[in-house]
Length: 419
Image 1 (tube, rainbow, N blue to C red):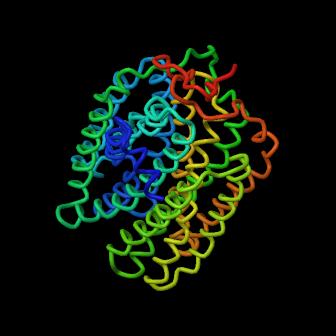
Image 2 (image 1 turned 90 degrees about the vertical axis):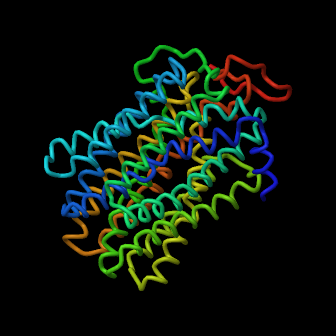
């Protein structure tokens, strides 16, 4: 299992790009947790915490495809680093001003969200250039999903440690400073500086003119909804049990389960169409969310959280392949950014729904939002099976593909970007 991942990491620039992207994404990956803890520490209600996190998610949803399209048009360094700095300044404003002026607090999270750099989509656009072969790119997608779960495991623990050592405000400042350094590491690398997107057909819809991509995004909106609701539900569960540390352990267990699932998934090559495989994985993901409504004791709940996370990374890794198969030529960063956007919108909806659910029906109801989101994600994939069965392309981009004008196509591999 480890040999395949080590082969990828030994490729020139691969480790730097992966680590830099993860560090650069730390602010966005922990923002919902940090905002909820900050709001509660400032005396705000669950509803206000959910609303601020939801606004951040919606702002990110607006900014990601716009910045992704800008990356496709102007390159990574000219977009990613300035966006990272502005986003960090927005979150720092929230930490320094607090909730005394709610309009200013909302404005700060909007700025932080809109300018969140599309590092995730940018990395996936770089993998074909760095790795070349299709099988290595597929494995890199799985490794990418696993590495995200490392971040989602370590991130909540890091936030809670910073909160316990200093304060929620200090946690926001430290996390966002680290994020800027990660973005700087990525954009200073040779692959990022030299990467250019393929020429694209002028169309105002951009990547969204692909029906298959729209179907995938519709499904992953509900996956995001499930994850967003768990953010608030986990805090409510920790409050019920009188210990803030319980929240960090639940989130870490969820990430650890996804890490294990993603590592196993990426260790082998899978036969058959990824669209069909994705339906099975999402069905298992939905099945894992439903038992969280039982809200048992802390030990059992932590185990259920780990089980609920097992199929998350495989679902994400498989979705990367589906995005690449359906994205129109020259829209690779934008297409991946739209996937991030649907997660952001879904997570915003989940946090917004879970807050009132806690206050109306208790913690079990808020976890019920997650279960409903998982089931809805599966229903969308089943309803759009015919659309997803007709990919825009039949294989993943490889070095020298239409998304990289700097190299040549290696023998035995299609460019994967047929018009």
